[in-house]
Image 1 (cartoon, rainbow, N blue to C red):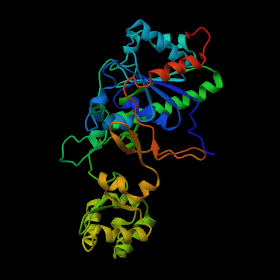
Image 2 (image 1 turned 45 degrees about the horizontal axis):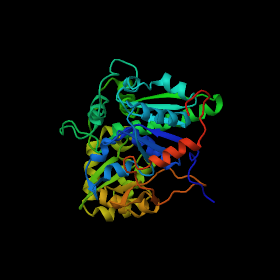
Image 3 (image 1 turned 90 degrees about the vertical axis):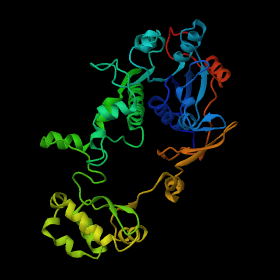
Image 4 (image 1 turned 45 degrees about the vertical axis):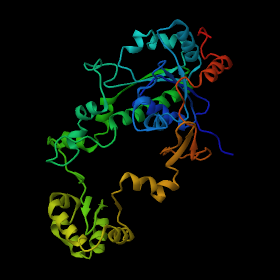
Length: 393
């Protein structure tokens, strides 16, 4: 018999809004945690007001907050603070993505939260982290994409500044945040104490620069945008066929020889300019021209069959409509749904973490209405014991 999720014994307080924090808590909720969103009365998470709307509700908000609960609390109101403190005293994790200093102004900095619950894991996701010269600056995804260098290696040499097509500044911070939380949970099992997990969006952008940083630090040359081409593996890019483009990723000499044979040009594998990955990369423009000359004879679909059957990694360049109907994506339960009383069926991306012994349901609970779970949260407070002696409750 499968269980709900490996984190189904954990209670998470979600003070975050829009994307970075809610993405982290969505991961935790998908893994079984009980997530209670604490929202501003009358307004709620800013994302509730982002289009597109379905039945008057934000599809954006609903996709990021499925399976969570909501209670509206004003943390400047004495009675609401009492409820919040009771909740903190029973929680395992608290996530927020305010600018550093905001929680302290509300009276709930790390010292106060530890006083309420010494086992609490507090994850703060912010633009620049809780230390350093930029710590007080506001930030959005676009700001850290620019500052973090990823825009400088995205696009084509003549395309100008190009944003990555998803909010990777927020999403990576959410993912690193959830990883930090899980590490802190493991440490708590050993030592019995909570931890402060400080995640800066700019830090996360630097962390994912991968070969761009290693290439610069090794060579002193500043990487720039290369379009769809890999900077150090060739051929590893998008190629034009007679009809449409395909991706070919021949990442070693053996794969390149198979590709050359599949293209009907086995002599390419013995060309001195293409004899190794290093020489292929040095001669990438000539190689692309030769490959595309061969590809011009057939359509993308034909070449995907030929090259794929030769054992060379390749694939189409799908638009979003093709992604959500791809039979493999669908078979992996990566397009799930939730039923909302107002909006009807909401379809969204699923949980990519598949684990033996745990459910991965295709139908998920819907996102909560603002303050829609007040009674359930108050019952939770009444039923659960506090985690630390001396905490309120």
